[in-house]
Image (cartoon, rainbow over all chains, first blue to last red; front, side, top):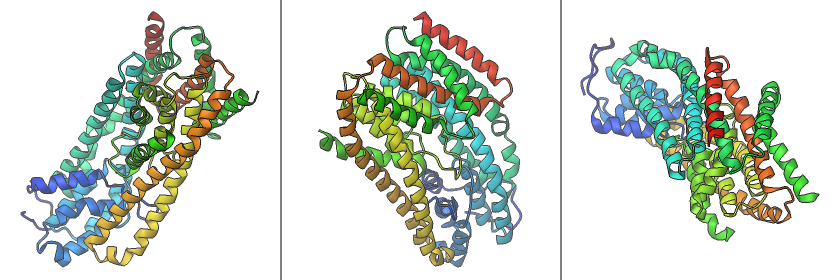
Length: 260
Length: 227
């Protein structure tokens, strides 16, 4: 491992494959000790630890202990995009950047990595994959096909994003902010949002058709009920969540059917 | 029968509960997958998928944003999928009861996740001097402890929920009086309503999304009625 002075070098030093794999595997467990005090903090230190072992003197040196202590403090970001922070912070530590500079950079990363990840993954990619899989289900695909379709599609994006994040963070170090202007991160949520809206339209009628089963006697009534129900849930959104409302309505249906 | 199924289901619930947040967040805990796996354990994966699809429509509303509190679908879907799959002939009411069991479990599961996150903070506080000293063992053990506790949380939750709710569901199926297709139509109408509301919340501010939705809906309805 080559180390440079406090200014960022122009090309990234090579991170050994074994270290990179260990960091990638640990990234999957980054939220293992998530809590309301330090949030992802301990996970960041946990993921960076294989890289910090490359510091001069190894795991018993003061440099390793100081870096690990610094990186295990409070941190909050989207768990997938936290890989960007892990890569960039590992690079900064191994480049020998000043601790104050690393801490300022660490604080500045939280907000963007949280909001971009939430919009891209939780509000975009996950619902899109879920709805696309429900459309596949509604089209009559086999049980295995539906499950495999969802898992492969979702995890292509999930693992790709984690890998890209680690790679990008490591390559750019403290200059990683420029990489966050990547078109996928900027335009991705909107494009995925449109695709997810398309998938919603296709998936809902097909999925309800398959769940109800053969025959169409009830289908028209159900579709009207769905339109009215969705309108009601949108109107009530600030007061009650749909899943809680579902719980109450289903409990009432059970009581009615069993007691009458 | 319920007791024989309990151990594999509890282990599956533990694994899928772990996937929700701690490891690896590959979304094997989504109802579409989790309920199907539970159904497969009972010997009827197709039934698991059916109730999983209905639960997935509802789960669209509760996405795991940051520190927000949300229901835990992994263990809950195992309970719902197993209860529905244990009635392979799909008697009237079985889907309603499986959905109700899953929703009740998801509610409790969300509460247990909050408790675990608080417990993680207590464990972190207890290790604070070691963490501040950069002790490698403290960082790694805290992470492993959190994941182990999350697995145990999911397994215990699944076991208790299945042990309590499966006999109740079995008893209620025998007393059920609403027609089978009407019962399923009620489930589907509720689930699809929640999904529709959730989709509107997620995409209504995206430029052009409503036209994509209308186009998709036209295509979906055409495919539905063309069969």
